[in-house]
Amino acid sequence: MSAEDLRASHSDRDQVVEILRDAAGDGRLTAEELDERIAAALNARTIGELAALTRDLPVSPDPAPPAEPGRRPKDVVEINQRFGTLHRSGPWEVPRRLDIRMHGGDVKLDFTQAVISHDTLDLDVYLSIGGNLILVVRPGIVVVTDDLTVGVGEVKVRVPGADEIEPVVLRVTVTGRVRGGDVVVRYPRRTLGQWMRGESAL
Image (cartoon, rainbow, N blue to C red; front, side, top):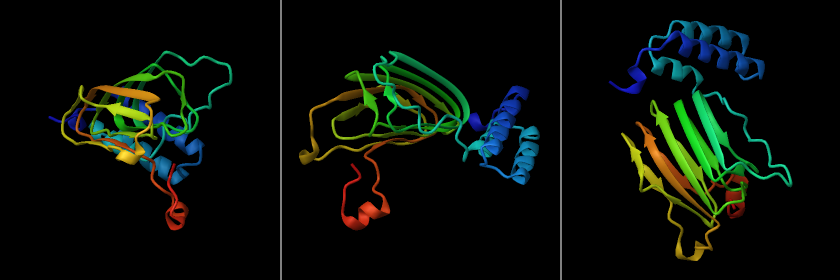
């Protein structure tokens, strides 16, 4: 039996309803959409049905709050979240260790503008119900996934060309388990304007 086929609990349904109401308060859902999704959440029988109702909604702040000058970043950050999308971008602080437990959603960490105070990051993840892990990096950031277990899915790590190799400023070691999703490590994609002008995304 897959994780999506597991029976949902009352707590699971209540949490999804709370996420839906927050999204409506932010203007992401109309009143009609909110009523439809709440009705579907209260009648959902499985985790997969609940996950489908929040897959297009962010749960964590995006982007993350910028780093405050003069404040030392945390060494260890733990995130335990159900449903939605976990997204870190902009000038977010990279800790020495980041533990992520995501049930029913995707994780995207964008390092292109991140504030890096350590030369290593231990990233331990557990993604259930087909969640994907996407790491957007810049030259000088190396990602190692040798000790990561992927159930059903692919690991796609972009290897820089010979002319792109730069001194390593951050080494990210990814461990943990991804059940039924993909792991992608890539450079940022170019915008349409950058593509038309022949510019790099970095």
